[in-house]
Image 1 (cartoon, rainbow, N blue to C red):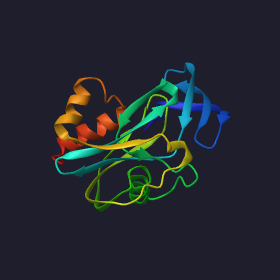
Image 2 (image 1 turned 90 degrees about the vertical axis):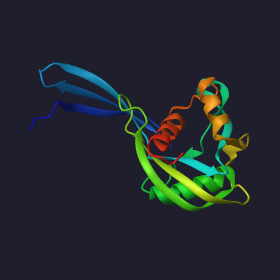
Image 3 (image 1 turned 135 degrees about the vertical axis):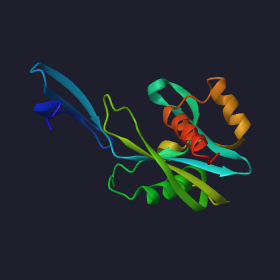
Image 4 (image 1 turned 90 degrees about the horizontal axis):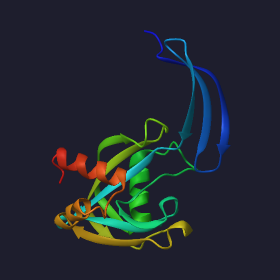
Length: 180
């Protein structure tokens, strides 16, 4: 088996606590050279908190797109990148929504943006929920949490209100696998 693309050299172009940007000089199978910018990030989780025929969504301001948006609860622990995704999922659910799931089932995985990023997402269905106090970080102080019926969520998708890609992928996967 031959490698389709060989890495000739690699350097870190930028790094902070949340991500690292790597610049790789590559050689393709035909011998031509190229350049890849790769964003390296820790794995993340996406949660589908399901109860009473609906999902709990969170709304927050997303600085890169300069707007508030609705999405499923999700997150990563940049300080503990090797955390078991199930532990991360339970913690993120409680942190953002205050919900605690009696049942937490991994239903699949996604790649955040395979053309530029190595980040993987783990999608979890959270059921048999009880409400506790949330445990939000300072960066989540503007977060709004609300339960929507499945029909309302689907209308938000149709009306371009819910446009977050990991949330859309998680809802589609849950629907196709019979969880919703």
